[in-house]
Length: 326
Image (cartoon, rainbow, N blue to C red; front, side, top):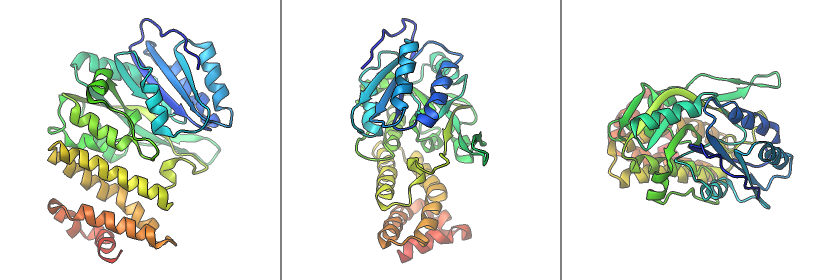
């Protein structure tokens, strides 16, 4: 482990985990160096890479004292990698960036200035997809409706009860939070599973005394051309199991905190956005276990009494079929 001194003026720590992402890591690191707010440090977690990721991280740490390198000899998973970074945080604010994504140049400045001005515990920004452009590169898309609903218009000092739609922003890297909130809540990422940020996001929201949202795009989230990112492998039964478990766990956090409006908003969004692609996969999937898992999940969600409007909508006939037949 390389541990250069933290810059005295550092305000925010960005935890950057990566495994075998050498094709993208240089761009991620460059996006940190290009930040208009320079008072940051980044903890780079090489999670047992066998490609040049480790070398790229090491070069960054050797050339810029704001980077700290942590190496895992063997892969431990994204949750464990992020948790390793959490133990080294010594700044007031905390953010995340996956090593195959890109942070927009003013992201840290906007996020830090918002929390500093408001005194809130969490600030949530927008994000867009980086999709293959068909020419060997990637192009940024538009802000999707559910992302816009969570972050537009700008709000300062909101609560989850007053703005339940923010519960739809579940990714770790679209937000900045006070480190004190993590310590107060004993927050850590689940390990040995995928989609570990779902439950953490909902715990942040339920623990936060106040939440800010900004419509600014803070991260470009890469959809890899080779289809190897976790969000692109939901057609496997094992990944589906982790995905559905994470969705259920996030809703359970909202329910346990008495956040009925947020739980209702989250369930509605899952039924409208997450479930239809799973049904399409299930319809042609060779493993009946996949269809059964999707059907059981749909039944669990549609059993909630306040979702009759969705079930009666002709556009959602597939939901009724999945719940009844699988």
